[in-house]
Length: 478
Image (cartoon, rainbow, N blue to C red; front, side):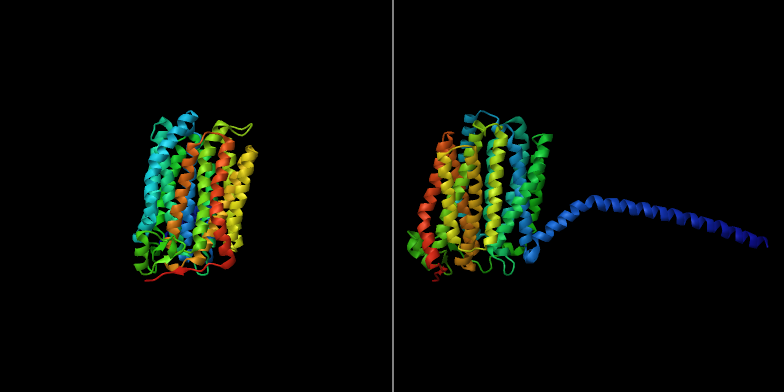
């Protein structure tokens, strides 16, 4: 009986112990569940946004082809570039006297851009011969800007002279990335996906990232001039790794050959004529493409001109009632809005009558530039920036449509690399012209009109002729 009582007591004690542990375990589970719920609520905006972005960039087969990863990489590229722009906009880069700043920029433009100008003619052929390095080239451009951002983080505080070559070297790396990206897009097209649609998605991804990163950069700038550059460093390091996440087919040259940017065999001169006829698989790009490229080059030249000229003009003569920084911001927002609108319109038009679109938008820019020179003022400057951004985006998408229509797939990647190289050099030329001019608004917009007029006059006849009679791919095989 004592044993029974002992056993019962033990059972009673044991039962009480089990009940207490069960109660504690249940309370702990409720606390853990509450913590997890709070954690999910806190990180949902980030993970939800990330899933939404991934769903948008990978839609319609872009995820399977690798185009979605390129869109994300280009968004990272745009975000990093705008961080550096924000850091430089209100620092010593524009705080020294205008004449001294222009002299330094002109000097370092020549020193830094000269190698790029000399190497530009060989970038396209180099990509033709070394196609297996495209991912490495994009990663190199990202890593170079990450290291330059760290260099700039010290220069913006001390005001040392390395600020200028480092800032312009960032531009060179950005342009080099643009050349390689243009060569990569044709390799990542999903089924039944046009080049115009792919490029518009990539461009819109970059513009949206720029719009998101700009206020973040401004917030970091309030903490100090170094902080946006630290942000740029982190972003470009991420971009370096993302470059290698692109599909291996980006580095594959299977099914590719070399394109010459000549309208027909009769336009090839000198030693190239003889070699071209003997090289098997060589293609020419067609008259519509070459004239479309010429018109686009004039618009890209105008873009480089306006960036450098207005940066110093508005600093010396800001918009009435506004500071120099606000004036530059107004013009920058106008140009960005025009570029986004042009990209959206280009995607909506779906490559209809690309020659007519190019002729029309270049003529429209020419009319606005002439009007701006005659009626110079803040409104006309902002309007010209917006129209130039709109025309540049829409004309570039139309050029993409011409390349897809008239250039055989065998040489399409090569044609993109070479055409983008020419456009980047046109941008450099526009910046050099701007640095050589006095800060006179009427004169500047007059020169801008002359740049566009030259491009329009030299290409309008060929583009209209191509639109009337059509242009077929021209192939020459030995």
